[in-house]
Image (cartoon, rainbow over all chains, first blue to last red):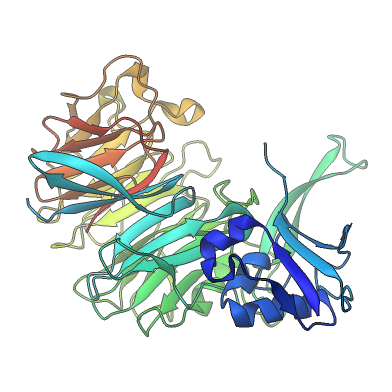
Length: 92
Length: 392
């Protein structure tokens, strides 16, 4: 299982995820987002645009490393990985 | 007057204004901390629709079926379909140019950059205007939204880019109003003819006004009489910057437009426009215009100090009303600050309902008049920047 950590900002829109231990079965980051979508319909369109790309001011980490493929989210994940999804500090 | 509500979309949430105990009072009803571009009630279903810009998380449609008490994301969101592309313009570094920069067009994949305006036909249709210039329609009460392809593929945009590269030329230019900062066209006005919901006028920054008479299957320009003194060709068909258009609900052939270069009026359904600016009365630049529902010759504007400054003229805020189709204007200043005011009122932030007129500014001031603008009072001076004010 892959453990998913979400920024608290997203709990404002998806309160059903707040306080849950989020563990999903997935082979890549795209799979993680698909798994989240089944638990919280609509969340995929918060994380990605309608082309499936990670939104410009959203970051996804596997462990301590930012994912490389923001277009197709093909970065592989495996059991025990921690995936973090958070907003970029791209403002002032 | 009881029961009349005003919906205020702001940089930090949705507010409802109602008269209670003899006073107009504001209440935050949703979307705390979120940028809200537009809030309006669908007169067919009474549902409230809010057009949100979440910044990091993108643009979203939010709905309320209990008069604003609770809100939720609409299950169907506006999404550009696979293959939707448009022609954009970019400046680039060009060492071969004597100026060091060049200007080139490119074809961009379309993604939703902003939900800007929503309109309702009395046939139940819901229309949404967006940046980068897509008009979306729903024929099932908002259960699904589809891009209007005849407009997206219009010859003025370079033709059908779903199936090829089109003509390579576009007459639709940009607005800086998109949430991501991308310079792209935006549809900010949707005027549905109450007599015939198959007829719509829309307005685009920057392109002009278009009309359909067949529910969106075909579109034609409606820019005759709109002039651009700054342009080498002042009467060019395209390149116009209407800031907003609104038609009279009881006599829809009367259409008003606050444009970047003045105020325009049409009494023949936008077939021809006449410039009715009155610079000596301060009526020229601005963003909003609203039309009386019963008399198409009556309209209000909130002028601003030139496009270079965009603030109240000489520090004194005023509304201007015409009762004669723009032949004359009268400034309405009573109750509004007359010194030290730097307010600017955005395109959707002025509305009227019977004798009540309301507007809000980016300074967070909300003013309301119960006597058609003769006198004003501040409902609030401390709201977030106001983007939209709509009765409903």
